[in-house]
Length: 469
Image 1 (cartoon, rainbow, N blue to C red):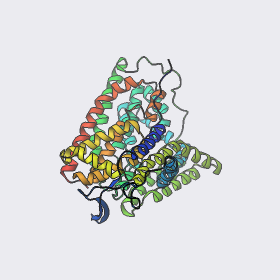
Image 2 (cartoon, rainbow, N blue to C red):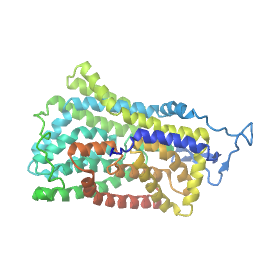
Image 3 (cartoon, rainbow, N blue to C red):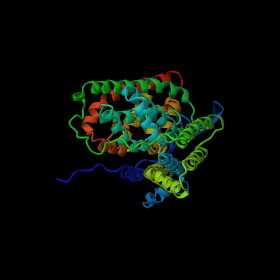
Image 4 (cartoon, rainbow, N blue to C red):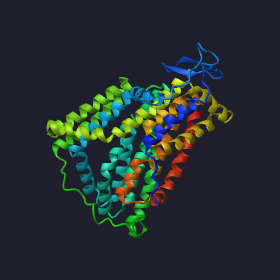
């Protein structure tokens, strides 16, 4: 029997584009009135509750009626979507290129090898430190797919420290899940979602920083319990029957030379500049992309890479995120179709009627449920932002939930389910590389998943109660 394969994320998103166009022939056009309101010194375009009005069709009003979209609009809307998300697409590619050059210097490999040597007598401390490091990388600069290249090294490290491949998977994935879920400055999720919602970039991060600590504590506690059990009794390992004798050896000695220290210093300085620039100088995607392009170029020069080598590694790094960039553009197309057909407000009006009477607290939790379900079909965080935030943002205006809470629900639904949904190509690829079956991964992860979702639910309820903006 031929094995049934789950559709690729791009196939699913294009299917949603087609479905949206088909629905535009069934869903009537309509609009809410909107007004510009200044909140905390920032002008925001808000939906006015109770002002929804259906719009006439061209048959009802030949001069002012809404015409149905042409069938070929599916294809013309894709370039429009790519254009609309152009700043994000180029940002993703430039960041990928810069990180590619940094990796080529060997600085990241060198610091991991140094950590292994320093903490060989206390492996649990090393695992905890790396988990926190991966979480910070995801929370601040949005690292995710880039962790894939470190998995063989982390597996080899864990095996050398008498742990197992499940600990290696947990170290990376729990770290990046907590980082994405409680992301403070992640440019691929937080900044994009806040931009769509009309919020100031990086606003409200104080609350997300507060949530990061208990979230990381839950993840580290879960990982430590398992790691200690395996370290004391190897037969307790969930992958004790898997052969890791080939393909998992520590790399040759990569010394932490003076030039590699300078590369790491430049990376840390760039992250600090990234944070300060957003907060003090209103930096956004253009400035942040320029910062990381400079980091990539400086890293290559410091490491004495040739111009051709820098160019090659930059293109390789960018190509690794090209798929994400295309997904972002096609996902943006869904909003283009809804806007051109004037059905977005009609959909929001229907959802409003469904959850009306739930109250702001339950509405925020319902947003989390919707976002988590969406992540099953669209595992790309950036792609999800363009699919769900155009609906969640106006819905927030109508239900007494702040847009900041809507962004928070989006973050939780994306970040936490990312490490468990089988449609996430990165996670499935990691499982294959680490020789961990999906069933055993679920067995290992589910207790953490339940606890982190409980924390997310409580966090949303508190956010509504304190008027989080």
